[in-house]
Length: 349
Image (cartoon, rainbow, N blue to C red; front, side):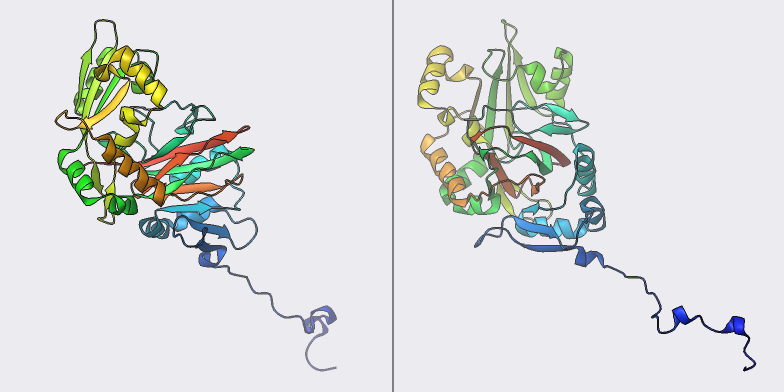
């Protein structure tokens, strides 16, 4: 026997066994990205490249990349990640935000607060079509990001159509967009008629003093009516400049607020009952002069021509830059549950 002690000899079981090495998976290899729809850059599709990829963790480590994707594409569809429930959706909103989630204040549509600052999507009747729009573009401040989470997709329909607001701006005839940019949009709202949200819901308070304070701080003209109702007027942008890209975007809701958006029978009934001045909501130019319905028809046509849509899959998360991308809702049948988070407040210059 050699001088090497028996206790120093390698065991037979270890002969020829390669040394173990830790497997390192780069963050970049965890996901794959591609265009969801042929011929359209919107939205960018991001899917897991491996099983059980933690989307929240990946997002926390790739916020700069997510922002670059949003600047270029306007929207990202995360699909196949098995995100989980509302808690994880709330965490994802935090992970993709610079300044945190926002409350849905100064409301224009009915929503239910589900948990924290997570809400249901707009609770309009299932058969009702919601035209494309940018969230809270009727205001002087708005969320820069809006995120949708498909908890349950409808049996039929219920898509969330989207459109690039930069391309919408370019498609609108120049004379129309220049007139809107110069004259801006005045939104007129009358509350308390039982036809739209009451002011208590819009401002999330029962206090008149709180409403008056909010309006002072946000440049909203208000008038309390003798019957206890309220009228507000606010002058807002028609075109905005995106804070990160510097791109001009079509950013207003004149085509939604204007009474020409109503079904003809309903429109005529409301005009007979209230007159144009007392309609639940309306839009005009900043000096109070009327907007030509033909111009609004051109704007609606521009949205329609830029619209893309895809069917939801349960678990999908759609992250949009709210200035670069408009969204809507198609009519649907069956139960549909889409949750929404809004973050990163932006405002007019």
